[in-house]
Length: 132
Image (cartoon, rainbow, N blue to C red):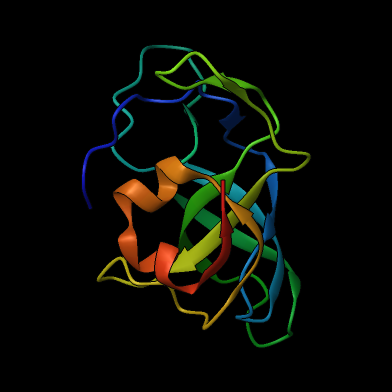
């Protein structure tokens, strides 16, 4: 896992439901924790594109239902600014399930992936169709 050029706006927080962008069989994920979030009292953990989160599978194949999985946020609906001044916004929130070695479990990713997530996890960029 590498550092990214600029940390995006934290537009996804604990309790948010994300679409699963890969072909592992999960359809809907709910964030239950954010990895490496050093929070503050009464502040809800939040994250942005490229962050690693712990999710519960809420929809999809029966074998994966109610499992806890690690995932990387690859799209967020809240706009964030890139270092060149461009504002980026996606139409939904989505994540890709990863394993212990930070490699994606699926073989292909449906939809667009943010460039910030590919900077941090190059293996996600290899299987993505479109990087924006």
